[in-house]
Image 1: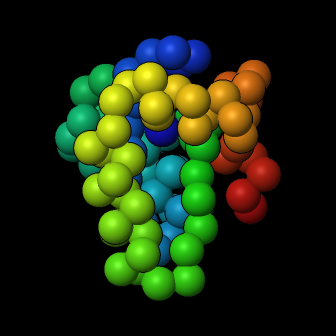
Image 2: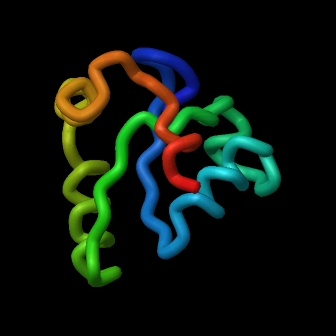
Image 3: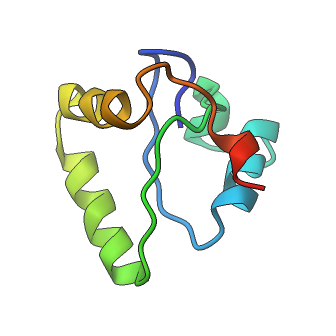
Length: 87
């Protein structure tokens, strides 16, 4: 999730991506994304096992901002909101 192009970034893991993105977009839950306005889904990866997803999340969070921006730019160079394509 991002607040805007090159803005604040949020990385998380969920078993229901469309639902969770909707919650972030609408500010339904208190926390980081609501505080910093992270409402755009600009990148995601899908995994069959939650353990794999959690391991990947930890690696991403441990990485640098430059690495996170490179992930986004590789998949979505125009920083288009990917949420509409989920449903």
